[in-house]
Amino acid sequence: MANVTLKIDDDILKTVRKIAVDRNTTLSALIREYLDSLVALDREDRRQTLRGLEKIWESSGGSVPVGRWTREELHER
Image (cartoon, rainbow, N blue to C red):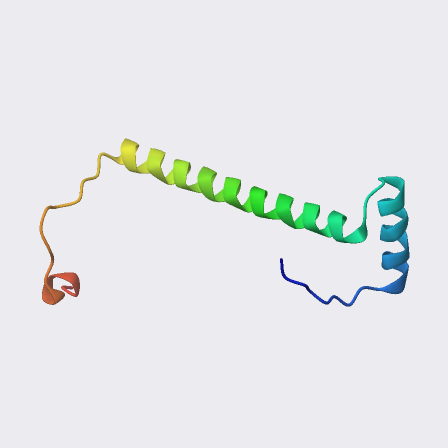
C-alpha cells in the first residue's frame, strides 16, 4: 500500500480526527473509505454511461459496415 502526504487545513483536520474517534476508526481509514467509495461511484457512472450508449445504439438501427475504410474514404468531403 502506498503512502500519501496531504496538506489539510488545521481546523478540518481537527474535526475529522474527532469524527474518526467517534466512529472508532482512524483518519487513514476514513480517507481510504472515502476514496474507495469515490472509485465505486466512478465505476458505476461509467457502467451507466455505457448502458445508455448501448441503448442508443440498439434503438438507432445503425450498423457497422464490414471491411476497412481507406484514408480517402474517411476524409471524403
